[in-house]
Image 1: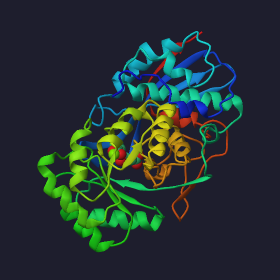
Image 2: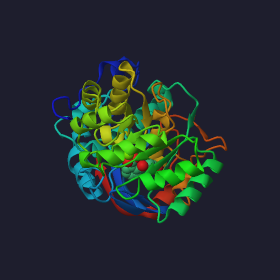
Image 3: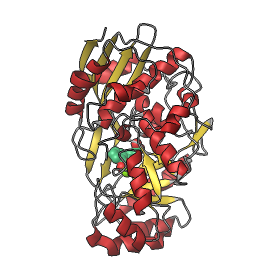
Image 4: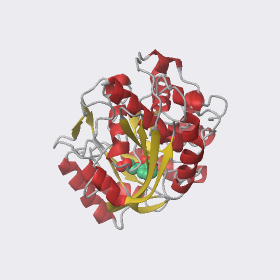
Length: 392
Ligand code: OSB
Ligand code: MG
């Protein structure tokens, strides 16, 4: 999927008028952080209790900027994982930027096109570049990408719980807090029975499920049976790379399929549309190589009248700031997985954590770039490994 078009920018993305002054990078810093999650997060592929991420800091002399790699400790969501991303970023991606005159963040794709795949590793650096250019230009990121709203709607992704009772009380608490839609993780054995209880307790709430590729077409009866729960969508029921079998499934079920893992870029959206593999797209910047990739996916979906929403990877405030900006795009038609900082961490690594009001809305930062200020001391506190690279 990300073969021949590596680094090629969608025409509509180029049409966003981006007037940046060229920059040269002086240095970059990589940090591997491990920060405990307030609650363990369990999906069909595993359980996480510590958020581990590679943080990228870029320095152009005048400005500093941050990006976050959305890979995880193990390659269970995607093939990328942190110790590999560390190597890809430090040994391949950053050296490709060294000495270059970079005229806009869109140059990133051209400069790094020889590296195939590795979207999350690329995305970490690409997002930091957007932050850097926008800070230098005195412009918030959401404005640069053509955002159309000043506040976003928050949803919550609730992991697999130890008991259905715990799940029910977690949903009740989330609704009290204001979340505008509930997503629950499912897997074989934690699906229709659980949904039956959830729908009995909460007959009308906006509800969707995410299987993280845990089913096959052999389970078509279970998947079809989910139609009776009036779900907004079912996310990635089948294999992580699949489009063909999803198209077979979508013809057999009424619930709209939303693709997450299978969407690697705008090519996947075109195929999904042509094959009928789903009706909704989850955009995660890391999974599609960063902001430019997200804009390509967004624009390609919008041209085909396919709604999108913004997913999440339990990011710290750094990665979250890019998700918040993407949530302002016009084709975002559902609350996504962008929740406030307090859902994940006792204390986020940014000075002003992301907060949600009692109606489930979050203001979009109006400051330049990604709009956050990193809390250097908190970042330092969770840093397990560090590397500085000279780039000029
Ligand atoms: O599939 O959306 C997913 C977290 C890690 C890996 C994959 C997924 C998720 C989430 C969490 O659902 C969303 C969030 O709160 O960031
Ligand atoms: Mg998902």
